[in-house]
Length: 183
Image (cartoon, rainbow, N blue to C red; front, top):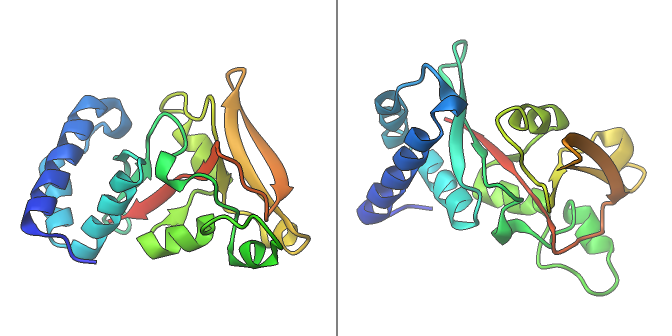
């Protein structure tokens, strides 16, 4: 969970270029302050590396004055390619009798040090652009739904964000998950 100096340098270069390209995502936030925070938090830098490595294209989408944290979210146009074909969580994965996927969205997010977006966070992301026009993304599922075997996911179709349900053990080549990281 440690990046080499070269990996850190390359990641910061990638994040800075994306930050400058998508200035509307983070008006009023200075890259130098974000970079300073990242350089002081090697564990968070590693999580961002994992987000990038799996196709998430993380970018800064906010700053919390109360906590002093920057918020990064996967801003890839479609659900990150390296995080698709996963069921919802460990319980769902273990319940499958055959054709099990390699992992689950919750397990993968935990291993990366990030969280799945909530429905509200997903809808907020959609105010920045049009995401998941061809794919869908698991979102954090309320316990009341999960206890009944279900899980929820979102996508954008017909210029509208939809929330759907599925069995938590289902997985599809076009469904992944988007993550959030606070630094």
